[in-house]
Length: 319
Image (tube, rainbow, N blue to C red; front, side, top):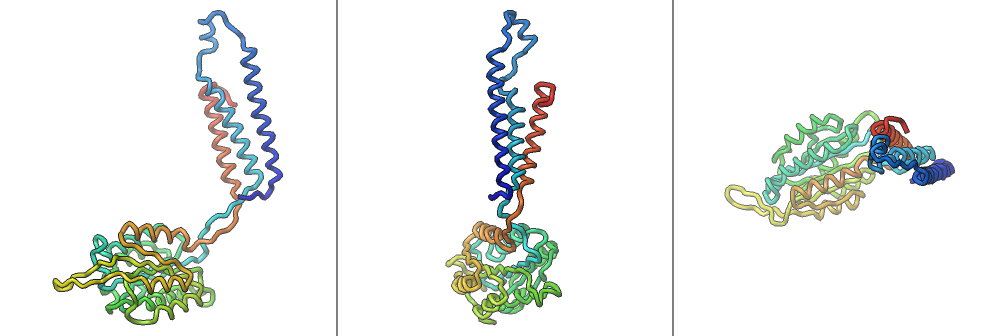
């Protein structure tokens, strides 16, 4: 935290002087207190109250003054704010291998649940779109702020959504970039700040070379965050015959590394939620320095009201 008017902090010395003055006054009051010989009369005139109560309003008042001085010095701090026109494309693998039950209840169901949680955690003003891919890729929901449409699209994610079997990671990236470029009339010339979140469990088996698509993402300055989801022991049942579908994240890692995104591995539903939460803390934000004096002034006003309430409640007067 920095201060735009640091010299004003010297006023805190005045607050400290008031605190010292209060302590000295209390000490003098105790030294010259009137002594009563009639204890019954003393109890009527000055009934016993917890000693700490009489100091609470003064303490809150001094704390309020200190906070107001800090706010007056105009503190500023680095604050994360959503980027204007921020766009996030979520690409989910819907190939047959995503039906493996090594992640309960299966990889695809867990991925859908985590995707819903992820998009609900993003700011409402973010544009979010959805791409499904297997042997090809298709935009299920164009990027926009309609979260209900996005939820409907996530619910429609199913094996065979794209009609072609396989795992086309490159096509998923390319299709996501196309959706970003079609966001609005301005996007073709001025691409909005965007991120692609791509989840898959295997290596590329069809379509465009993933590294070629990654190069396009680099040119567009769109980082691709990838999630390798599943375990080495995954398998799917086809006609009573188990087919091994171990997770393979090498291609996903290469894509993330080349585009400046992050590579994540998740082997359970809980780990996948944590990965999405981690990605959500950085996607679509920028850091800027802002005046945060209102925080201190607001808290100071709360303490002022507390001091007034305590004084009226216990002593029937304002501080």
